Image 1 (cartoon, helix red, strand yellow):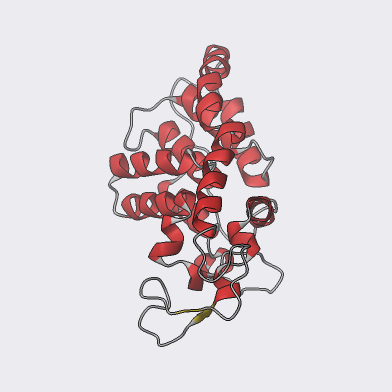
Image 2 (cartoon, one colour):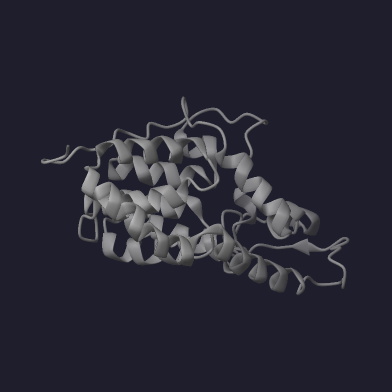
Length: 237
């Protein structure tokens, strides 16, 4: 998979149609770009570290990108896990390791998101029998550290802690709270965010947040982005 393809694929998780250059439809779920302030990202380390990884990736600082993406992966970010797989497959910022790349893509496909399943199968078909055995064996440690069973609770703990700090309520209601963004896409525009917009359950309540992620990633990305082909390497059987 090409580096450009993976970069676009990752950005798509935040603002799907806008990044791909297509027309946005009301039926396409997304994370509202307006809420992506520094404070919001600090409370969502999955998005924060993926964004840092994408930035470094775009600057072709692949070693730094790999480090940031690993941080995002610890908080169950499937897009970051998929990008790690692509970097390992192609040897970007890290030594090429096809069995380990498959293990990471298998993890990215853990929730059966269509595009990651497609790449997982393509990777598997390109591996030799020896590489397949190594991928299965080495994947156990990756699953134990980054799988949803352990990674989701990490993020859920952060979300709950940050939401408890919401001004004006002990039960999560934000009432008439108004937020003036000093960072993010709305900074300097003079526009404000309603509290119920910024603190919407889909961003802060764990079950709702995972549902949003599922809605963003469950459908194929066709007609919105070209994710490229798996690159074959010499000696593949």
